[in-house]
Length: 311
Image (cartoon, rainbow, N blue to C red):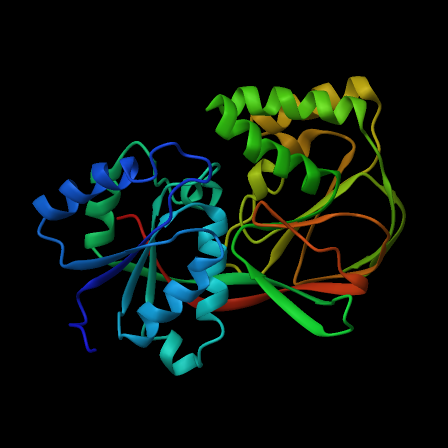
């Protein structure tokens, strides 16, 4: 099957736990039709099907692939694209209509889940920017060398668990603020730290760390100065503050001033070497992954994905 180069291949990813999984698509479809967008759409049954469906769209010749989904769906899509040869990848442009729990990467570009018409207008203008990806390279329990790309961030330690909870509570409450409050309660009663040994630029960090965020993007507020087009990663290390300081730190996170907290230690680098982080959970773009075995590295690859950005 060959499709015209201007035709969109749309992958619709319903929100996990949504009672009516087609409701969001039924809102988007009339806007596409009124604006005369040429497209074909496939619907994912689960997060496991995103990889298969993106591969299908690539193999069928779609040059514009629009993901109607959140951070995790975008993560699956870019990992699928990165398995293609550079020649194939360079001909494909990825776009996003936000439909996730957090939509952090979309919010960076000012795409709004409540403004579908504006989003589609921006996508139709086809303003393309090559963007960076982060990459975590690790060994799994089968002693296999693995890697995973990310658009937004890698969280190691407490925040990986908190972000997972935050996604669940956002689905439950439908509110970012309430999800933060719930996360705070868990943080206060289950606070822990992890013995880590890290190498960042010329610094060696060998101490207990509560959480670390490595951001190619804004990292859910933890790396607010990061941008996915400067060939660098932003890193926020959080040492173990007192409980009262946790309250203040969470407030700074909510209000976008996270780096002002004195327990937060920021870096900018091209690579983070994690020599030790025993029992620390790892989250990639808001989704927990199996904890790597032994040491691992987090790096940046510059200008590897074509992404549709606002006008």
